[in-house]
Length: 92
Image (cartoon, rainbow, N blue to C red; front, side, top):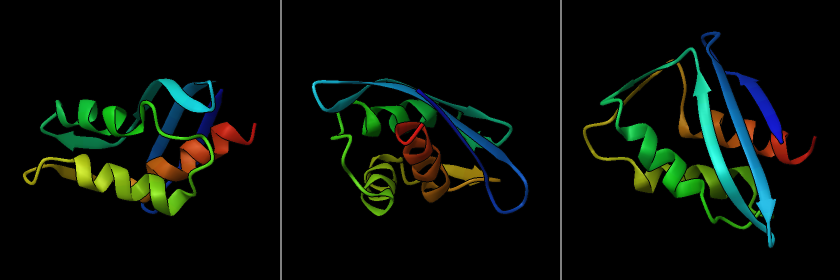
């Protein structure tokens, strides 16, 4: 499944994933945003991997926010933007 969302400021967030047993699997997040440190992307995908496919955008964003290290800097996107891309993938 594939979903895209153009966040405020014009940065593209892309989510590719599959559903297996009602949960998210093989989650990949990409786009033209900036994330520092780059390893924080693993925290984002880890927060989504295994999440119930029925979670609302707000719940997905909360999972991402909680998983990010305190020093993470998201430029051009947000946990909400990632969550919206995921929900769009799920509705495709």
